[in-house]
Length: 222
Ligand code: AMP
Image (cartoon, rainbow, N blue to C red):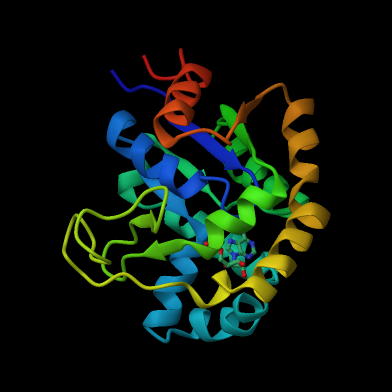
């Protein structure tokens, strides 16, 4: 018996915990964590034509143009490991991206099953982002205070030395928040109108947010 693929969209400003929770959900639900930011960073690191196109936008904290982003994510979703669906983190970020995703899924008789909005105040966001550290090997995310690695500045999974993203510096973070409010926040109403939106309080410890999230997704995965 084949079950219908499940698509979960995680919404919320940068630093609201989408990546951290998507990693946990990936383990718990066995669905791949598809993060557009990670895909761009991978391309940037490997100096691919896509990475070179995206670089200047990412450096400024602006959005990469929709056509490039949509093609990249749809290509990722077409890979075999996404056959049962995916947890989307950082995509869609504009109404045009959401419409393109809906159209691509509708072509296969599918749709977004749930969009979860993580609500976190701006002051908390800035504190979270500036303390964020990333593993260059596996992409795991840590926070110097709220989610530190076991070993000083080294990844728990593979021991690689953690780094701070260039775009996690305060000036860029301010622009990313502005871009979020202008272009991405309208997606909350977009998914509410489709009756798939759930809002959860993201300003709590990681485990409490995971619990709320699992509750919000109940019934989706039989
Ligand atoms: P993130 O890791 O999600 O914070 O993304 C890092 C950067 O990648 C963003 O600031 C954008 O420049 C770019 N990016 C990631 N996802 C998208 C998207 N859905 N649309 C446009 N640009 C994106």
